[in-house]
Image 1 (cartoon, rainbow, N blue to C red):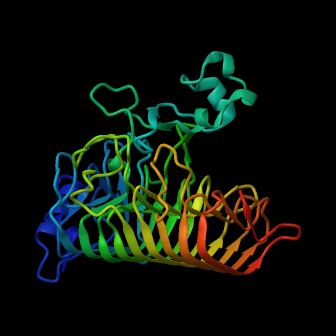
Image 2 (cartoon, rainbow, N blue to C red):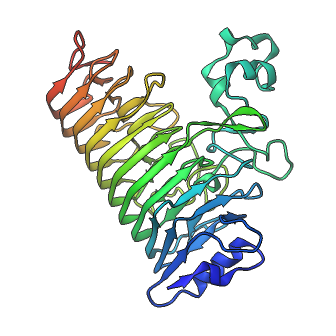
Image 3 (cartoon, rainbow, N blue to C red):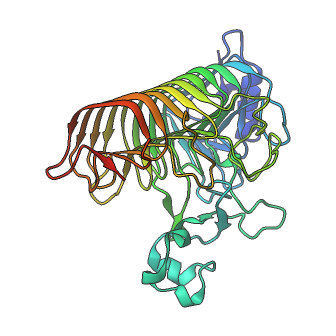
Length: 428
């Protein structure tokens, strides 16, 4: 076991790198509050901390913060990153928080959002400020009644906006914790606050646990006196190739989906090498050489909400999501936030096609939903499953709504409590 304070260097990244390199046979690196004569007790990162196999990072009542110079992750598995086209498998990587362990974004992020969002600075969030300051909205439409959803969400804050030789869109560097091709892993006991994009993303990872994680993000932040828009602040994203993973004891608020399983094989883009910018995938997209599916996932004990999207989202496009248990989800959204519940599939659009066998063997149980959107929404094809023990206290739509005539095949529904006058199941 090594302590990072024993390796204090000129900057905090050097101390962390030195401690990881010096870890012993147990692989344990302890990160307590920073001890330094300069009086700063939190760790400040200019770049990601890379984690090799057989590494356990213990965050003991400490805060790790991204600096305003950082356009990178908090932690990343050491086998992926810019220019790494092929990812060697790693194993036994663990991040464990003890006490109050916090990962916090920069005061002035260089970039936020995903590869579909254009960086702007300023990037106003409120309709009133969009009308005053948004240079992407034509002058003739700068009235509150004419501001569209796209006007509010196509752009995201970043101080790299307009700078030469800097990507003008978000990418995988904005993800808080990014693992690729890692087996036998865990991330537990942490708070992720004001992430620049998704808080946690896993690609082709297996046999792991994500538990006791709290999120603190809402798609906006006051920066330089203005409420700025910060897109795509998902909580946990499992990507293509993830399997045999448990997600449990999740709390808090996210700007985008709290938990998303996205097995997307795009049909419109050509080959994208691993480590490319402009995408939230750090791995290559040649699915003839890697598994496209997500399977054997347990999601349980979730008490959280999203400021814009869904608590749990399963999105397969030209791929499968199968063998998923979703149990014990409570929507904690306040009355002024319109939060989505559980969303399965999507209309065929930019992501790709929902195949007839895209969603298989899924159970949803013990779900309490409190808001005014759809509690359980099935836009794709779902074959073999159960929905039981759902209470929806307020919803404008059927508790279970489906889009396609044959969208539900051999799905058993029972023990649904709907608001008075609302149906248990119906077509969207």
